[in-house]
Amino acid sequence: MCVTGLEPIILAAVTTTGAIGESIFEYKSAKQDIKNQLQSAKNAEQNAAYERQEGIDDARQRRLKAIQNMGEQKVQIASGNIMTSSISALDIEEDEKLSGEFDALKIIDNAKRKSDAYLETANKYYLGAYKTKMNLKHKILKKGMKISMKTASNALY
Image 1 (tube, rainbow, N blue to C red):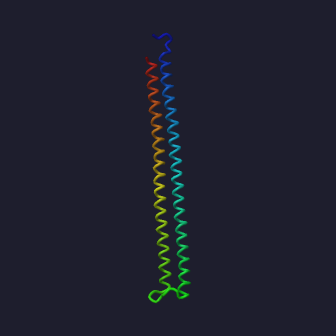
Image 2: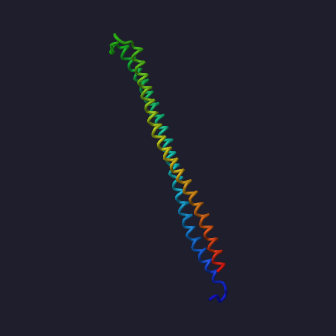
Image 3: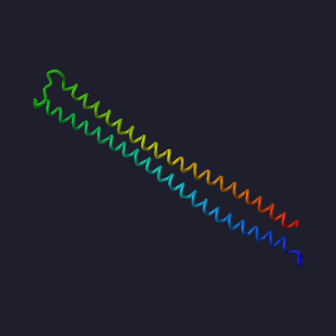
């Protein structure tokens, strides 16, 4: 019973309005998800930078400690408290220098590993945000096509 002939148009409008409301909710939800993923990625990058700097600082401290130890050993050798009959004072100093440098490089390597792990995590968050954005665009296009098809279909009948 078509009294006014507006039923198909009203039906199309109601269908469209419901789909738009659902799309707005999905859009807001996806945007919040993207925002959270980007913030998590930035946090991971900050953690990576912190680990890198911490490694540099700790390595610097180890090198300074090695220099301090070399100075103390020189004093001990000069005062005769260290026997140097089989090894020279230069050998003792060189051993301490190499040991300090080796430890410093180990510290830097460990910090780099931690930093790289954080950067990998950041990349995963960035990728997740990108995928969410692409899925959102796909859904919007798909819903837009469905709404257009329903509107056209309802208008024909």
